[in-house]
Image 1 (tube, rainbow, N blue to C red):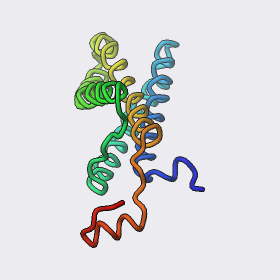
Image 2 (image 1 turned 45 degrees about the vertical axis):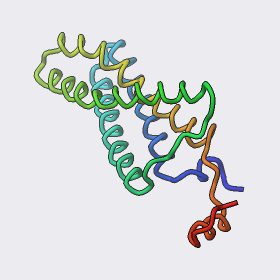
Image 3 (image 1 turned 60 degrees about the vertical axis):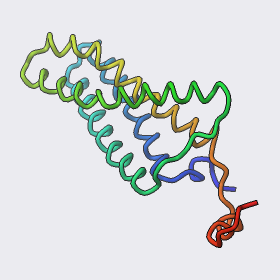
Length: 163
C-alpha cells in the first residue's frame, strides 16, 4: 500500500508542504513583532517570502509537467471548492505585490506605512497559504481522480473506450 502522501505527484505534495511552512513562518513573524522582536520578525518574514518563491517555482513546474487536474467532487462541495479556488487564485496574484511593497517600506524605514499595509497583507497571505493546503487536500485526498489502470491505459492507446 502506498503511503497517502506518496500516492500523489511529489511536486503537488511539495507545494502543500511549502504552503504549510509559509503559514507557520507568517504566524511566527506576527508573534515576533507583537512581542517587539523585530529581528525574529524580519527573519521569519524573509523566510516566508523565500518559501513562497520556491513554492511558485515548484507550482509552475508541476503544472508544466502534469497540466490541469480536474476536481471530481460533486454536489455542493463543487461550489465550495471553486469558491475557495477562485478567491485563492485572485489573492495569490496580489500577495507578491503586497509582500514586495512590505519589504520596500521596511527597507526604507517607513515603519508606520509598513505596519498599516501589514494589517492588510498578513491576513491575505495567510488565507492564500492556508487555502493552498485546503485545495491540495480536497483535490488529491478528499476527492481524488480515479487512478488509471494499466488495462485502461492500453485500451485508450489502442483507440478503444475504457471499461
